[in-house]
Length: 387
Image 1: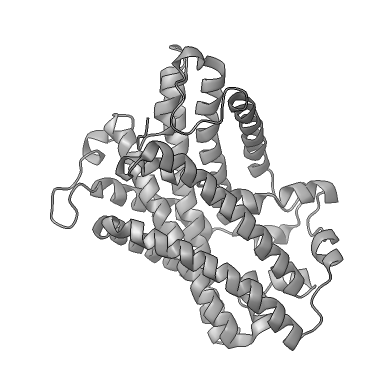
Image 2 (image 1 turned 60 degrees about the vertical axis):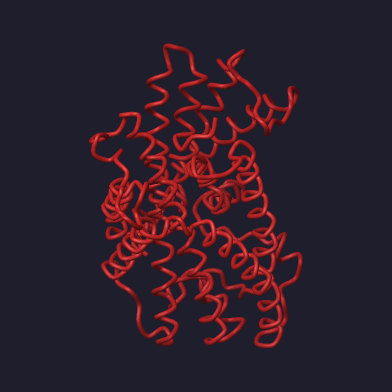
């Protein structure tokens, strides 16, 4: 059944009588917190990109302090809240435009970076370097460092439940939502693989120099090395736009999920947050919940004032919270579903459905553990958290 509550609703439907309420409570809160963590991590990334472009425009002679990063982050969250309140009805068109913009960005990057690399600092890196070279900059063993590198693509597709929380506003949701999840994750994986292969073939081999770029953003440095100042600024502006609207999508998803949770009386002050606006231009929008999500994101984002390790916790929060929320209803369906499971319009079949479910459960359990492990290694140096 398509519902903005989605995950906690399905958990309650499939779980045994003893576990229905506690598991639904767990899923609802982990999903809310995970989506807020997603807002924090995406908008923090946008703020870093925006400030890196300013640094690039000043030829690297300026770098943003943590208060400036936080101020930019907070302004971004407020901007998303404003758009989510007054322009929510335009989101289908905005998201369609963003899909084409994202694909165009990937195509342009795939074409421009190798050409720029060949013209400015040949040669292009070899295939053995792109697909076979491993540089371990952590204190973990190389094999485990390779596993830790999965965290970036895991985070990239970590908000695949956004479609679910917009299902009450979608047409033919029973089929459109699962297809949206599969197509977004699949397209992301394909385009991401191509993009990363081209980036690896076009970047400088001095990895530490890229990570410690004077611009404060590794991707800005990669574009700069291959395309020069103007080319880097042009591409980074497009990257920023894509990142900005990705954050807006998560604000909408978080507000709808949290609104559904408050509609069922599960959040503090639910009677306040469950109300929808009747005012012109905001009619039927959960304005109070959007404001609540914005406020929570701004408060949790204060972590980025501490240091880089604290800021990275925002990324872990997003992945772990959302994966726990997804894992639980799948596990409930596998353990207790039985006769209560009724296949919908999208169904992987009698023989594939359960094996796929068990693989998903095991994978997400592993991912949750993975996000809890420090990326620098078991014995990070004192400077690792001060970057």
